Image (tube, rainbow, N blue to C red):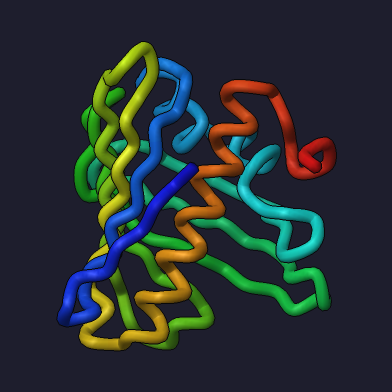
Length: 159
């Protein structure tokens, strides 16, 4: 199960989980748009409807989706570091966050027959509510990914 913590200044969210799959498999799941469409979301919350990624330094990525109530959203950015299968860093611009641009860092470390995944999402600029909601969101994301890479569960098949 994923855990999350927030720095006292509410600027950084750190989420981590042990995923029972090798780092190479986890890296594929977080960089391959076809795979991300299968697992990133929940039919009762939101669904990612389109995803594109040019996974290289200065390459761009974009994800579009729809909330369960029909509202749409977009998240996009640029890749800042790409070191498969150990590290992925990118800028994060989300339509619901206005002009704020934050940074997401994925750290993948072989551990106990699987991968210790640590996500550090920074740049919330003392916005306690945004940090809290992203911490909760990243916990869901890690749990969804675990279900996908270990059991093959998708948005439509996950209980």
